[in-house]
Every structure is written in C-alpha cells, then in structure tokens.
Image (cartoon, rainbow, N blue to C red):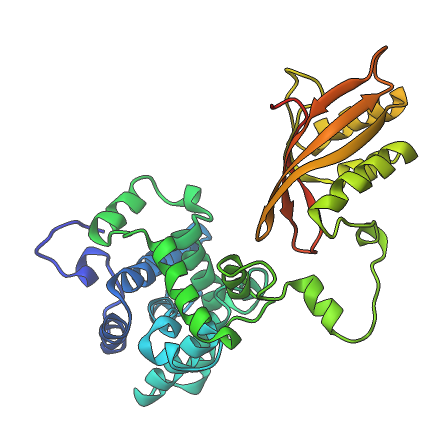
Length: 349
C-alpha cells in the first residue's frame, strides 16, 4: 500500500478495482456510519493479508472481488434499513447485501457465499468451515475489531491502514449501535447470542434471561446435576449460612464455590490471596485445622446484582484463642442466580 494523499483509497490500499467493488464501496459508505465503513474496508485489507500468509492466491484460491464485497458489506445490519428490520443484525446485513448484489446481476452462487460470510461473521468455529472467502472474511473482521491474529500482520501495516482509516474507537462505537438496536427491539438479540449477552449487561439483573433462566422456563423440569448440582446462595444472606455449613462438613470445594475465580480473600491480617487455587489451599488448611466459624449479620446493602455485607465473625480452631473480627464482603450475583464472593476480608475494618 501507499500513503500518497493524492491517490484514492482504492489506489492507496490497492483494493480490487471493478465496477462491482466501486458500487459496493459507495453503497456501504452511504448506508453505514463512517467509522463502520472504515472498519469494513480495514477488515478486507486484513483478510487479504491472512490469505497471503496462508499462501492463498487471489483469483486462483479465492475470489478476491467477492471477499472485498463480503467484508465491505458485512455490517449493513447496522444501517437504518437493518435497524428497521426484525432479525439479528448479521442476518439483516446478509439479506440487504444479497438484494444489493442481485440488483447488479451477480450470480446466485456468489451471492450465497457473500450471504454466508456476512451472516456467519460473528460465528467462531463455523465461518472457518464454510469456504475460503467466508473464512477469510471472518478472520479479517475479527482482526480489526478484536485484534485476533494481529501479531501475524506485517510490521507497520496496521499503523499505515489506521492512518488512512482511523479506528475512531470502533469496538465501543460498534457495541453502542448493537445495544441501541437491541434495546429498541429485544427480539433482535437472542439470549444465546453475543448480542443477547451485550444487551443483558446493559439491563438490570434478571431483566433479560440467561442460559439457566431458559432452562428453568423450558417446562421440562430438568434439575441441576454434576458441577451445577451444588447448592447455591439464592440471597446474599445465604452465603454466610452456606459458608458455615461447608466448613463444618469439611467441604473444601463447597467453600471454594462461594468465590469468583479471581476473588480476593484475606484469611489472616496481612495475607492477601487472589484466585481459585490460592483460596482452595487456604480453605483446605482451615478444614484440616478443624476450624469452625460463627457469623452474625450486621449490615447488608444490595444494589441489583452487587451486595456489600458485614458480619460479626468468630473463628475457632485455628489457634489457642478465638479470632473475632468484623467482616467486609463484596458479593456478586452470578449468571445462574447464585451469590458468591468477589472480596472477602474479615480484617478490613
């Protein structure tokens, strides 16, 4: 590529220059915000680079014009036309692109490939199995928005592309467009898609179903088994109750289940543990010592899926004298509805 400002984007990025690619470029520029259009063009450049890294030859191993079209049109679902439709944005975009290509006399076989590339561009593990153009498009798009495989790009390429087509905080701007659509039309955001996950994070806890909510609502009466069968704390108050029960029963894994994977725990003054492995070892030592714990609730402050808890605690069995403390605990409600520790510090106060 070159950075001569007197040259067009097509010339500077050495884009495939045909009447179809020119029409595609102009159509996408008119239909989507500039930062989305720039993302789509960058996605093609990165997709082409991935093809080169794999030893694939344009015109022989893949249809370069079709790859360009698929990349540049892949976010049409975020256009005004896409927003007014009722499908998930990837499918809306694929349908709009197919109609655009059909109007220009593109063969149905090629339209089908473009449709797959656009509809599946957020589907990891599926797009890569649907053909060369579909796989390359998904790879280029993923590089531009999430940095996947960015280390495989030639040195300086990303900087040159970004100088010509600035990012403009793409990933967050893209997410905002997705959320705006989903809030207006929740049926565009199936709970089992990444769009549904985005929407769920912007709504009060429980306002949008998660996987376990869908299971409960299925009507088949399925009950937890295996790793999901352990009792969960349905309220912040129950965390302390389960903690005392698990400790008395010597259930190390039960105790560990009351902490998030990256939770912070202070077993003794000045000892700060982070993460499941460290917490598991601390719990094992407590169980082996024969420790017992009595918790009396002092205060609980809950806001949506976060709770601040303080207990009066008496820990016995770890030394000659009982250890008295006032705990400071931050709990968070998990996707399955259970409450667990984010921070557990009996000595913070």
